Image (spheres, rainbow, N blue to C red):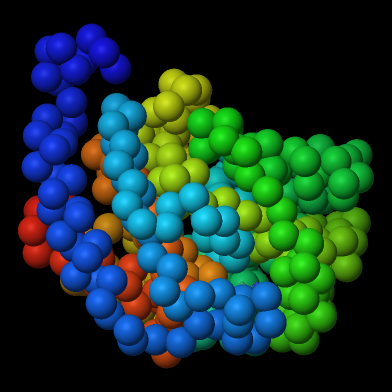
Length: 325
Ligand code: DON
């Protein structure tokens, strides 16, 4: 880092100017009071609509944060690209996609629907993510107990984040499990259609899915994960190779086409960057070969995306030519 600094060889050489723009975008979005905090479980309903944080981490480790960047939130659906990445890494793309498609569903994230091959459409929606959890539990190190698997996944996530420690919100986990009629319906519907590998223990896999949704991080930590994805799978903070480039390519492709719920097409059109949002109001945004960004603000629009997060992305693209095309 220091050598590059002396040679002015950073991917964003004028980082101080860049920060000024990020600050302006941050403050403009702060006054946006649109949206509603998720209310399907009390733990999420209690989140303050005021919370608003943005963290940036470049592929060469320059970092900037503003706002509520150390307040923990649950990963929720932002865990989906991470478990998918882990499955690609440990099982390989062919195995994963024997079970899960790569097509946007065009439907709600928790809709009771499979594709024409009777597979979940993609790993970014609930059906696909539940199946990813089943693959991780049943095919990757099958001898591990659920407790061991939880630790194994958590430490993989933390390697993506430069060994920052993630935590776990047990109240959210218990609530998710209580309020999960639709997810159970999806789980059993997939079992009816023989979507899982042999020997899958569905109840364990459902718990595992709720646990992944209930892991906690903050904007600072998540921006490092996004930066690892931006950097071809090498964590810019530790230089550790966490993911193969082909795994990263698959993850980013599906974040691009399926990461923003039913807004994914419009987001790809307007913003042109791979991203993933979750009901806690978090958003992972990847600018390939440049940086990772995490935004967090709990109020969501009717499609489930963070209102301030979306405004941030649209503003960013007005100022910088990060749109892929
Ligand atoms: O499965 C659920 O309903 C939540 N725990 C995850 C929700 C989420 O962020 C929506 N995702 N696509």
